[in-house]
Image 1 (cartoon, helix red, strand yellow):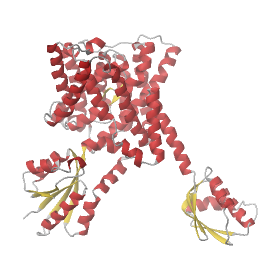
Image 2: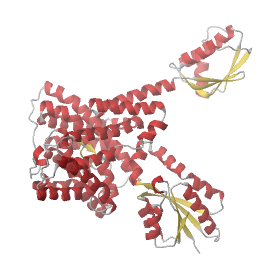
Image 3: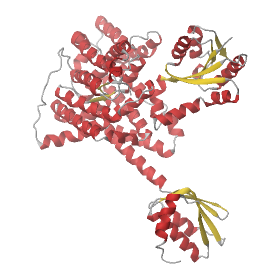
Image 4: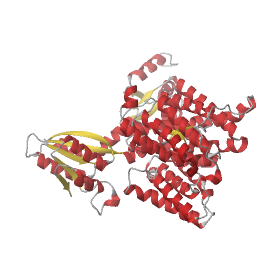
Length: 139
Length: 477
């Protein structure tokens, strides 16, 4: 069964929906653990730093962004942990999932980027194409 | 903090590759910033080489790229125009000395008092000024100039989708220079604005009279340069800290910037500082350590020595296109949302910073004005007390000290109170000094005259100490 489930989250509503599915799968097996992976995007570093007073404030701000997903997981009895990666979201998730040899990747179909609402999000697309394990894209 | 060995050799392959990428991206910028400053392209290229190589050793933020920058170039324009390049070299040396002092006396730490509204204003006005500096190079010259600027912009924004390894500006330069050369289209080139010499920089002593008058000329510029350089360098180091998830030594960085500029002035370079754009490119390309900065500097010089003849043939419109891309990348586009959502005073500070910089063409003046204005706003905010009435309880919100006592006293002076007995609740407040205590005593007296007795409740321990110390001296009981 799927023991090590990677849940890619950007904190959006889609990520919460993905979390719900990840929990459903994880609850089949007592040994399952969900690893919530949040990628701090390189392209947003400049703007994030400019708009925060200190690195501590920025840290809190980012935790807040992901809070909906974490709150949802807190309310369930599933074991989970969080990991923060830095870089370009798609490739970073793929690299991490392949290095850690996770059993399953769960990701929302699209994230926060409004422009791509019509299409499958570019991050989920990249992850789907390049990850070595099964991937679940949640609508 | 990583060990020095880690900082140098922890990421050799990534650092060498990213250093090369940065060197390629650095050449057009160093040339463009020289043109903005009104000096020969070599001045910016030498500066970039010297600063990058030195910062690799003496900087406080491994993986950060420092070289000739637009922010610094803009400050030195009047100096070069009115007094000539030798004064620029002298000013660069003095800038270095000032920055070293800033580092030694740990003044760099004060940079954290620059509010983010001012920082946002800084990058925005920088972007606007670099753009304005490009205008004379492409407006009203020829139709082909517009065409080349447009094609450059299309290339630099679409190529990264397909080719990730080679920086898009480099491809645009090579491609469009070749097109311009072989088609014989009339375009201004870098060669029309200055020359490239294929030699290493050599030691010079600036040819200026060593008099008090010279110092008077260069000192204001050096102070501005030192401030602008440190503001951009420390902002950049915070960005690199964030991207890499590691810490850096801000005072060492200030001192390092100083050492680099000091030496740089003796080798015919213009003052420089850290570059946000190039540092982001470096980290994105896999650069993390000091080696990446060193490679960037060395490879840049190598390219100039080998390819100097070709560099002068780059058409100006292509360089302008790349600079417009740099402006778009520098500008903080979330500022528009910020203007709507941020507190009014913050939005105003940001706007004032931008307006003053665009007005004076001096980033340091905008920063200073922005800091002063936000300090005033802070004082106004901290020195207002708000009092909320809940039945017979008056809750004080804010700090009670010499600047806020007037508001506190006036509230009770003008307030109609029917009750015979009231409580003043200090759970959201604190008394800081004698003036605060005196104002409280005055309010008690005031109310007593009107036949109202007062209970002061929820005073925290430090406030109570000040109060009891002074109450024994009260005039009547």
